[in-house]
Image 1 (cartoon, one colour):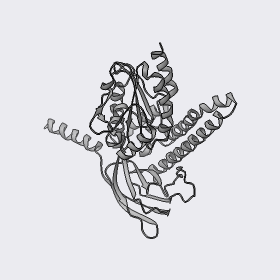
Image 2 (cartoon, helix red, strand yellow; image 1 turned 60 degrees about the vertical axis):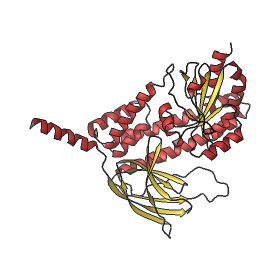
Image 3 (cartoon, one colour; image 1 turned 120 degrees about the horizontal axis):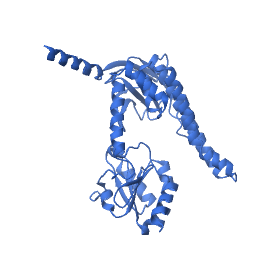
Image 4 (cartoon, helix red, strand yellow; image 1 turned 90 degrees about the vertical axis):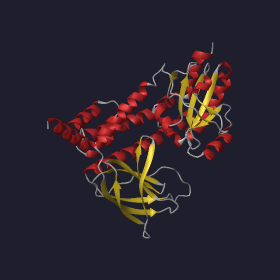
Length: 376
């Protein structure tokens, strides 16, 4: 009997943490619809996007549908590829009015902030998170513009100041998220703040509160699982560790190439994609570095995370990179997990034994390292 009670208690604990479905209604309007694309509801699992439903647009440009959510957590509305809205999916209906497609003559990818109307407690917090995300994005644009102007000036002081623009913007955004963690930690959606708080006392305090009040809450359980998995993967990516292996298709579709093909050489792995502006911008710099150090023992392997082979091959033809090229399947989802990055370009330098010298390299830092190791 005692064993039976223990078993039942264990099953109860498991069931508490187990994802529970819920149904909510999502409604709203689109001022300028684009009928070429649907309205999609999705969530992400690591780098993978999982679409769960679509909502048809009515003749009066309104939409409304009951959506079954597989578990509580962050979901997103993809508004016909023009706008994106994050919301907390659990037990609160969502009402939002979108602008829709950009009607300006010159279209710039700078989506507006969208507000969830009549939000419940969890989505009141999501409104604030979304607003601070919007402000951070605008700050990033302004920092980039100022950097460009400063680099074209004769003021060394301005150049030095502008170089830190992105860092200042990130620090300002962090202060906003810390404010939310300190004042809205009682909301279920407070779990969403954990990914914003870096290694701060505010994050430690929020985790401690969640452990006391929501230790078996599915989104928090998933967060802890992801943290453990990330720590395990990160432990394999330290300097001096053997880099994760892979063997991916070359452009001919027959040959497969990976780090093992470059033993005895310094290898720069360049993760990129045809649609990535900063990646394309960095290619001329990589060509200069390759020209300077290839004869001294440097190889480059560009790993595309393009989802369309044609786009990858078209970009290769346009850029004429004189080094190895491969394309990771499934938009690079697995290799992004293995190498723990979610933004590109991502440069990783390996030594002659295939061990990690450094990750998250700028081209400037790369040149410093190569000068130290190969200019002898």
